[in-house]
Image (cartoon, rainbow, N blue to C red):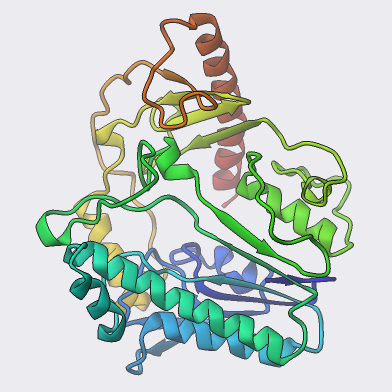
Length: 370
């Protein structure tokens, strides 16, 4: 949620930063108010939340409902002034937990196993929360001039066994959460701004998450600092049908521990996409770090001043060859064209490596300043 001229700023939900380093806590990163958690996940009933630096234990409420109520409370407090609210539901992230009133209808339907039914129930609870937020905007008479964005940070998580299997419909795209294939990075986004944008339209251009900061700043009538270098572009003129175009070139990379350009990386240039497949050994977390992640939820003080040990010893094998796809003709990424288009594949690979070197140089510089 973003209203004209940023004033009050609030974050409700999952932040996934600052659990080990207070420099990255939301209150240190521009948010006036924070209710949520800084780790990777929380139990939906046995949660422990951060309220502006103070910890509060669970009180019996379902976590998604807590976030909805806190978000509505933020709107109530700031409805008479411009505000920015970043609401990040963690659902349907694991653990798979949902109220019976949402879960039972999906189980009784007979089409879904328990895992998929639970995920759909968790999503339905989020939908109910969004309805509450929209009603809150209407109640205060500010819905028409509030920019409302709804999206996901990645594709669905697949896996599990038997009744706990979560593999489900994903438009037949290749890949899922954690992958730079389309099934992992292509997500829908809904935007609602009655006073600023014509509704009832579909927009099929490739837009990246990094575009939303400059776009929302422009929508609020603000100017970015002239010396601020951003990865994204302002696409407001395109959304308004005033001309312009989106950036045709985008990059992705993700693995565990030290980033590797040879693993799970991609570049998109127009219709063409080069993919470096993931390497299993570089995509797993050590058992000790998994235990620490669990401990952060219920014993945060134990890890408050933790010094990061060197990453676990592991042997990462040589990477598989890059893959090349034409997304316009093959959005499901079923036909690797690298052998037919070797020059194009090599050029995109070099551009991906150049981008990675620039980003990784900045990452190392930040670590050196710590």
